[in-house]
Length: 84
Image (cartoon, rainbow, N blue to C red; front, side, top):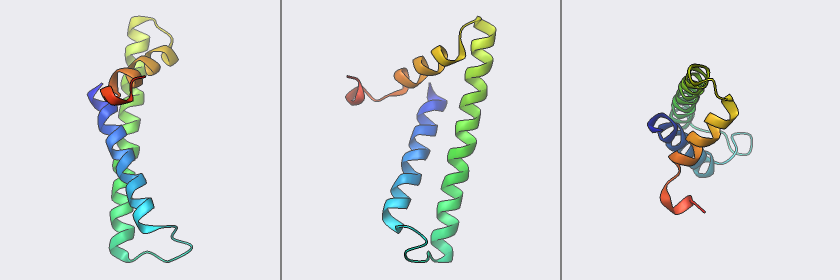
């Protein structure tokens, strides 16, 4: 659950940067903006990959459908305000 929360936070950061910088095709990003975005994107990608590997391993070990485990983890990782 902690890995999923970290991945969700990293994804939110990527979205924040996209919103703040705008589309790179509309207005070219500075080198600093590009580096910041790429670093955030790589962090999100790596965290998401780790979550997927952990979910897959757990599902296999517990003989549960992977999709069910993934849904449970995503639901458990949501902040209480998002439960609904």
